[in-house]
Length: 112
Length: 115
Image (spheres, chains in turn purple, orange):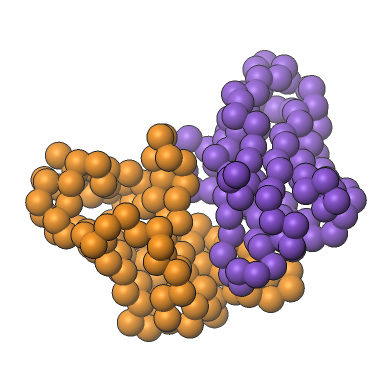
């Protein structure tokens, strides 16, 4: 079982729709959860992090964490073509300080 | 802060040549990570350091790869000899462990092509 698994995608949504990206992780002791966005040819950049169960909102982005289900998601409201990118989920395990475990990423396309 | 700095940004070399990639982490960060990204394998952790000491190098593909961190502001990843299958984008990232501060920040990457 992989440490972090994401929808393989690609995910395609129309402009203005809600894009939902999902991620599951295997280590129940995981403590920190991150969503990175990576544009083609660029490096990953942090969108959001979440540590506690529940929702965390930042503008059009909402991260949702459910530790009991070992599930974290990212919702993008009012999707824009500029949101088209690959989204990487990353998890920090409680037993491994510093290191993040990354999923393979989900490619999102927002069409006008 | 200038962020994580990597050089060179692009490297084209011939099989068998030595390649050295360089990284300057964000000042004050005590963790440094080297990743490799390909379409086939995604983002792979090669090695990471804490306070200049290698913590986990299990991701280094083989003995042709080596990494050093002689001080807190500089690290190198060396491939000797290089092979075409080493072609990838190599990212360096740094972070500082602490509650709310363990975000990894990535450099722009080095795109390596081995002919």
